[in-house]
Length: 236
Image 1 (cartoon, rainbow, N blue to C red):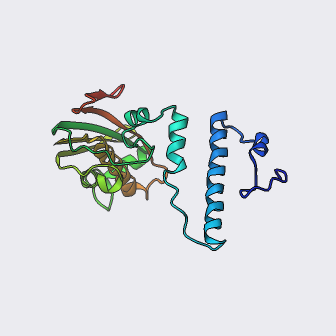
Image 2: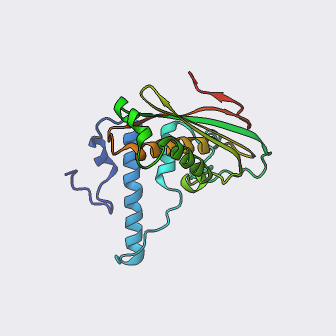
Image 3: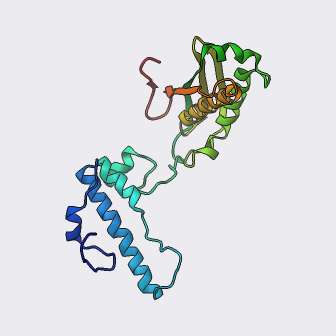
């Protein structure tokens, strides 16, 4: 298909000139080409070392994906690390070391909206499973405590306050979560997880009435504390 190139990977660089990758930029096309040669070279080296026998994949060191993130984002070296703290200097994902950071008061508020038909909304209070709003509140509180188990690089935090509010609106349920802690890192993810799980619980409680319920507007509304200071979402 691509000519008679006969290197170990099956293609030479000249053959890649005509390769077509629809709807991608020149940079992304180059990344695809480099990824192909990197993986092909590794397979060839493995075959030579094992005499063609099947073996476990070799540890090739830093993966191609973080390098792609660095290249496509225009960030290199320490600049990548400064912008995206979950990447080290080699572009590999890591858990941020917060040992040297001072414990400060931190607060985050997140929200979500569960959109449903008026008929579903009216029937929510007569749900045979129980009160969907109250159960959603409890689910959000429980989820916030387990954020570090759900999001791999989050730090386990001692949360000093969790509040989840679920209230009926004209065309759905508005959910707001507020999380506080005194610690070395923020609680934005805890607030977002609480709001998301509370919204999913409302769906679970009401899905028998309406499978078309939508969960929308999951976002951070505000935060305070920490080196980056405060934040408030537009329109919040």
